[in-house]
Image 1 (cartoon, rainbow, N blue to C red):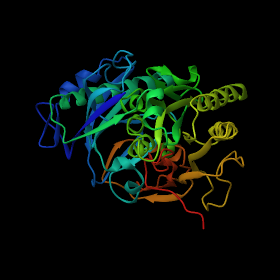
Image 2 (tube, one colour; image 1 turned 135 degrees about the vertical axis):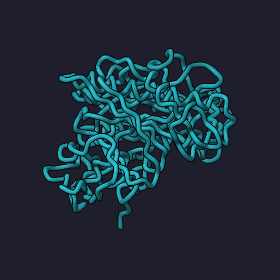
Image 3 (tube, rainbow, N blue to C red; image 1 turned 45 degrees about the horizontal axis):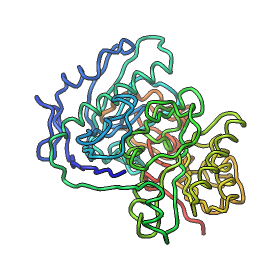
Image 4 (cartoon, rainbow, N blue to C red; image 1 turned 30 degrees about the vertical axis):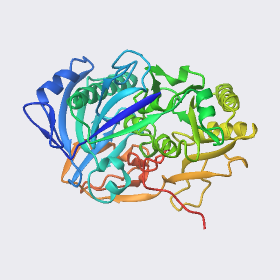
Length: 428
């Protein structure tokens, strides 16, 4: 598959009479956007706001972050299986509004939601303090069940990103990046002397409100399978979960996974990047065994020399991570793991809930238990009250002056387990 990503750089976002991109500015017609995302009887009110880099603005509790994009040529459409038909994506041309994002917030859905500060010390921990954000504040009807609340907010965000993406349909991109993966046999023939590498992409699927969607299918229902890397880059995988904000992969991150981008950077030079094995993170031991067995089987079937494995979440998924590592290593295939750590506030505790001696090459996204003080902001989009109950917060996290003291676990993307952040650690 060959995908051309046309990047249209957005340096500002403003409300205007017409939704368009002009001179690097994304103008948004509020009424049109509200019409595009409205109509769900589960939501009594939808409000729009804007947050820009450097502003004294706090957004919380954050549900998802989504990048606006539009399919301009080739099969499939945006967010297949959800917004468009479930056609296979990953080829043709897609335009992306690079530097813009849709952020959904409002009444809290589940306790594992996050904070985005657009300035101050918290801004250094989240990549979304650098994007020009269109914020959607959703207010649900009374007594709406959590899974219905999550679905309603998720659909609003995806619809908004689709609507904004259309503004880039007829814009000549500022930059075009091309990504291509050949069918396996052709790839091996083209790069016979390069080590064959795949990416094992663990998706969060641990029960209600811990959902990830592949072509619209809840990944709980899948067995591990092989997909082209460009399918991921073209919106085949969407977030629908409420795991801790620091290591959750928002939809934005799935579409911009740096592991995939970095492997493409060295594809055909140092490695033969043959594909992505997607697998799920399970609750029961039987399901964990099944998925890790299938993942190792696929790695062996592809005659891989090495894999990179990333997880999403912590605790229970650490077992899935170690099972994948141990079983793939047993096939004679080298492994590198990407995770984050919950090592206590002093960093002295065991970092992961599970371990194995085969996990001897590990990259960390940082310690989520590190405590940070977030100063009060002039503007709040959403609600401050959940600060005491979201994962990483505690009784008394929210101070009377509006400042927050909490673990960096509360910050969206702070310890990204695919490396979509700035944190790591070095052993001395």
